[in-house]
Image (cartoon, rainbow, N blue to C red; front, side, top):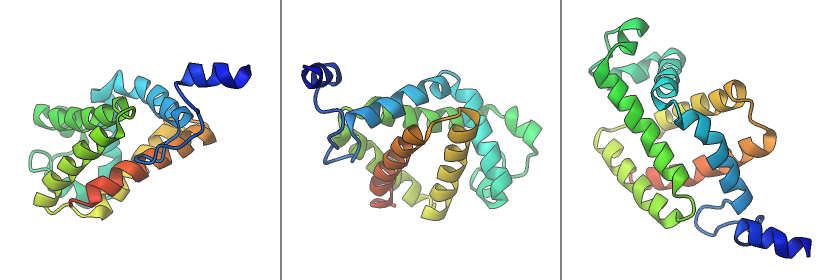
Length: 166
């Protein structure tokens, strides 16, 4: 009886991995539920993520004409850069929200890969961004090991399709 209720509750086997994303229904839940508080204040957390990225690798700041010569206080005040951080966070939110349709996420990430490939952004900077995001999720939002594993699979999934088009 418990297995029947579990399948009904989850809409299928909660531990069967999607052949497209590699995520189980349980892991999709972890990614979506842990992203909600971040997405709720996307401007704040997006800005913080980029400021941490710039501190970790100052070279990354050079990709952004609007802020490359600004200090952190002026970056925080740049509406143009705030718009970029919100766009970045929105892209993650769209991917997270559409994990029930992983083929849609693939198409979104391929488009993102093409646009960043046109700007000659290498995988190195995506990996650095991932490291900052993972650190923020783990330490600022206190994600569990199981939740972090779900995020690892999610990021691997989206990066595969971004990198295919870089």
